[in-house]
Length: 93
Image 1: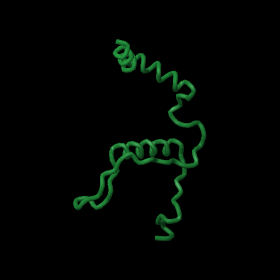
Image 2: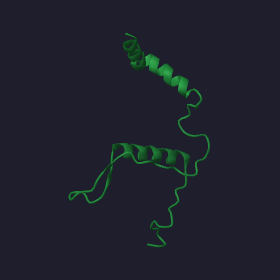
Image 3: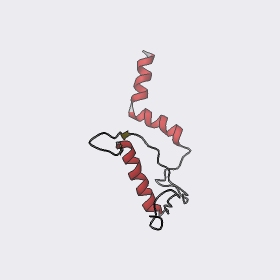
Image 4: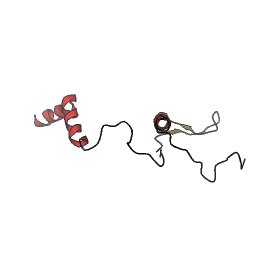
């Protein structure tokens, strides 16, 4: 009986919001960081491997959503994106 009650409390939305609030109370609710970021790092979630119909590896849904969010953050924070030395530039071709 205690296990069923515990499972109910664990899955009931008001109690899960309370449990999450206890863990998250130390963090701010700001949608974006207050300071200027030096870089945006996007960790890949999933990809679709290449095959005969599509020669390139395509990002999965999770990777696409992360990239879209990073693009929104980059646009709103006006972060300068600097290419690394190995990437092609107009000067190097």
